[in-house]
Amino acid sequence: MVENLTPIIVTFVVYLIGMMALGVIAYKMTTNLSDYVLGGRRLGAGVAALSAGASDMSSWLLLGLPGALYASGLVEAWIAIGLAIGAIINWQFVAGRLRSYTEIANDSITLPDFFENRFHDKSKSLRVVSALLILCFFTFYTSAGLVGGAVLFESTFGLDQQTALWVGAIVIIGYTFLGGFLAVSWTDFVQGILMFLALVIIPVVALMDLGGIGPAFDQIRTIDPGNLNLMGGVGFIGIISLLGWGLGYFGQPHIIVRFMAVRSMKELPKAKAIGISWVVLSMFGAVMTGLVGIAYFADQPLDNPETVFLAFTQVLFHPVVAGVLLAAVLAAIMSTIDSQLLVSSSALAEDFYKGMIRKNAQQKELVMVGRFGVLFIAVIALLLAQNPDSTVLELVSYAWAGLGATFGPLVLFSLFWKRMTRNGALAGMLSGGLTVILWIFIKTDTGFFSLYELVVGFIVSSIMIVLFSYLGAPPTKEMEADFDKARAMDRGEV
Image 1 (tube, rainbow, N blue to C red):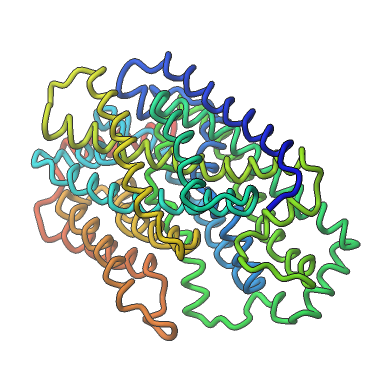
Image 2 (image 1 turned 90 degrees about the horizontal axis):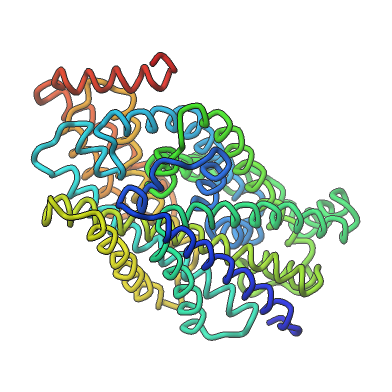
């Protein structure tokens, strides 16, 4: 717990008031469901890129990843390498095609909406199943963020876990409830900048305090030479599992929805440059924070490895600066939870309520359903976060795998394979999600069955997509025409 709390509390209060103010402003600009769940497709390049990065990384980037490096050494950097590769491929290939295709496919505003329109699915099965799976896996993901918030408040203010969970949840629910997608994107833009600065500043200042990178690495090597061995203690299956985290990018609705919301195709090259730079540099900062922590806290090892970032803020900086850096952790937590709540509420409003219950619902009615969906999902996530033994990395691992295997192959094949059919989409989605759930129960510590469930689920889903697409009737001429239009728009031919 920090001794001088006043400057940190003041910083937190100012920050939180600012986030709520953005929510109120966005509230006044939100008139229909498209505004609420997609911002009316009017995000600029910078906001789209930084909000995608911030909603992606959450507290995992500032707590989970540095904690893994601090506990196990450089070998955990394979996760960062896999994620960096995944993010680059996502921006390079998926962003443009998804932006164009969702516009061609009846101006789809959610992923379930896109799947239904992409495959001309009159049965509503794609919409309902995908919405259900989004709600299922996002409850775990949102819980991970709430656990991260509890770690932050416990470490900084000495609050008990229950109080910490509710303090963070009330603010996040507040501005997401009010402003929807615009509030989430604007706040994520600010939060992305805060996170980036924190991950650059902390390892640099810590290295200077240790006398530079050479002495710091010498000390790390002295403690345990394996700390700096990228291959240390991990075999081929282990490396594939860690790199496999990158496969998850293609199926994260809260990230790729930013691609759908970009103002125009002309904004994408700039957004891509900003987004890739942010991810790669932030990831490098997180890796260095964990590594340098091994040397810095050698004399007084931390009880909880996931507090290494928080510990640095307390020992290296003036309380005012520490308050800003700790606000970055809160920003990371908030930026992901708000996006997950919004995607979940949009699934309830657009895909269940409008799609299945009231097809002629008015826009104001749908926005209200979306807002109360935020409250509903938040309550469930709070209940799941009550387990004091949950770790940020563990919860994120499950949710990331579930979403990545369920939707990753489906998104990629639907964007780039004209022969794909509705039956292939449904089979791939169900098999990917179920494989992840089953694999968690049969997973072992060694051998093939130690493989990360995302990798297994991704492979199974891809096979099922191809198999069931070929078994049934081929795509209709209308589906093929939409595919060609989207491809032409992505290439700038129209």
